[in-house]
Image (tube, rainbow, N blue to C red; front, side, top):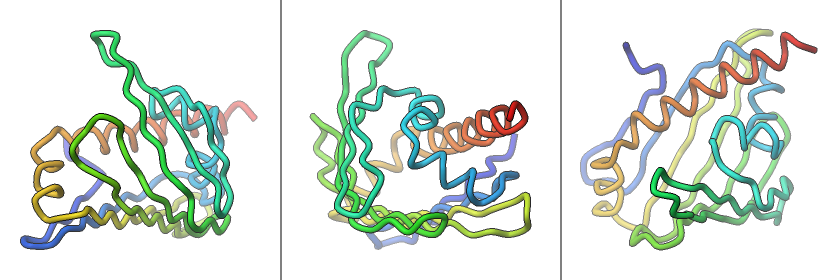
Amino acid sequence: MERKTKINAEDGKQELMITREFDLPLNLLFKAYVEPALVEQWMGTKVLKLDSRKHGSYQFETTDPKGIKHGFSGVIHELIRDKKIVRTFEMDGTPFGVQLESYKFEQLTSDTSKLTMHVIYESVTIRDQILQLPFAQGINMAHNRIQDIVNKQNNRS
């Protein structure tokens, strides 16, 4: 099956551009990134903290199949409802360091929207190491879950 989430990684650059079109209204796509209950569902993680505002922060925790807990966190530097989130992201216990993430939300039609993620890593080497992991599969699966979970919730209301 074709991945709907597209990842552009130019050689020699320490960044990724990730895009995905969703069959979701803009406000519902944005909600999937700022409401703790929705984040927990599509990420499959526990939200310990999610202060969705400028100068807010977040802290998540996930448990791997071996029962080992992994934490990740960051600071929200900018949040413009239904338009943009700029935040840092750091995963505990990894050599990858802090990355900067910019999420741009766009309305395409009344029922469709687009997410563009610009992720900047500390180095080209770290970015390339991330791409060696099952990163592309994982982000595509996460975006598929956003589509499914938010659609189901929207159809119930």
